[in-house]
Every structure is written in structure tokens, then in C-alpha cells.
Amino acid sequence: MGAEPSQTEPSLSETTPENVEALLEAARYDDLDDVKSLASAGVSLDSKDSLGRTALHMASANGHLDVVEYLISRGVDLNASNVENNTPLHWACLNGHVEVVKKLIMAGANVSVLNRGTCQ
Image (cartoon, rainbow, N blue to C red):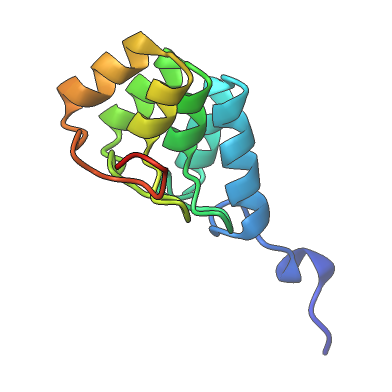
């Protein structure tokens, strides 16, 4: 007859807005174990929130080198742009995270991508 409640709730293996938010929060707060758990459960590491931010954006912006290295090792898009065309490299630079900047460039991040900033 009716579906059981457990059958209608999204699982971790689905890339839902809630799972994307959990992934981005884990990356933002340097929770590598949660990032790995979500990845193991099937959540795409290239998932974007409504502002176009990825886990790599969040880890890069906050200088979390271990999370950045893990995401790079999993083959995420190094040049993913958010709604303002900012890449993880932009955010790492803006926040002064030199080691993250180096890691992103060495991994192949495009240093020529322009954002919607005021630079002429």
C-alpha cells in the first residue's frame, strides 16, 4: 500500500541538497573523515550548492591542505567555478593560503581563469 518512511527518505548515496551541504560543511571545517564517509557513500565530490561552491572551494578557502589533497587525489574539478566565476584557486589566494595555492597549481589548476571581480 503506502511506502515505508525509510523508503522515501534519501540515502547518503544520493546527491541531495542535504548531502551536498554536509559535504561542503565537512570540507569547510576540515573534517576529512566525514568527507571520506560521504564519498564512500556515493556522494559526488564535485557536487555544487546553490551558489556553485564545491568541497574544494570550501577546503581551499579555509586552508585545509589535507582535505584539498584528498579531493585532488579523487580527481575533482580543480577549475570548478561558483556563481561569481571564482575557482578554488581564487579563494585560496584571496585568503592567503600559500600551501593550498601551491598544491592546486602543481595539480594543474588553471591560473588564467578570470572571475567577476574588479580587476582590469
